[in-house]
Image 1 (cartoon, rainbow, N blue to C red):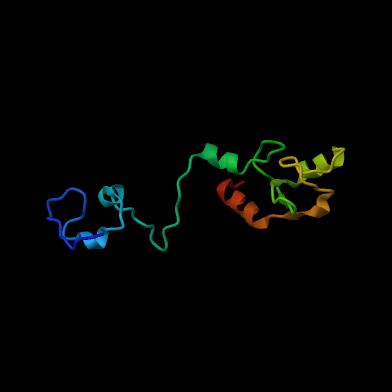
Image 2 (cartoon, rainbow, N blue to C red):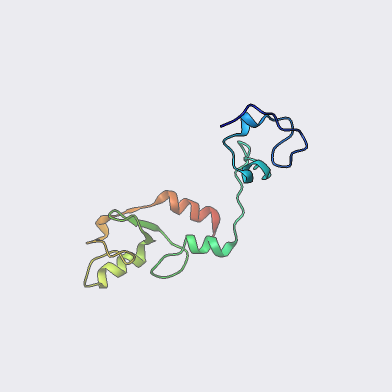
Length: 125
C-alpha cells in the first residue's frame, strides 16, 4: 500500500514531521481535524442544559422529576415509587407503563438508590 515515500512538511493533510507510513490507516478527515483533549483524571465536570437533565430524570407517569426512584426488574424502566404503585393498583393489566412487559406487583421492582443519588445531586432540595 505504501511506497515508503515521505511527504514534505508543506502538505496540508498531515501533521508536520510525520511519515506517511505512520498515518496510512487514517482518513483525510482524521489527518486534518483538531485533536480532542481528553479530560484529566480529576476533571469530571459536564455541562448540560437543565431541560435535558429534567427529561432524563422525568417519571414517564407523572412527567415530573422522579421522587423515590424504583425500577422494574423485567425491563429496568424507572418510575416514581408512588406513581408506579398507584398505576399497578388501578390498572387492569399489571404491566410496565412504558413497554407493557409484565409487572404483577411492587415486588417485581427494586429501589434504584444509585439513580436516586444522582437525582438528589443534580436537583438538591
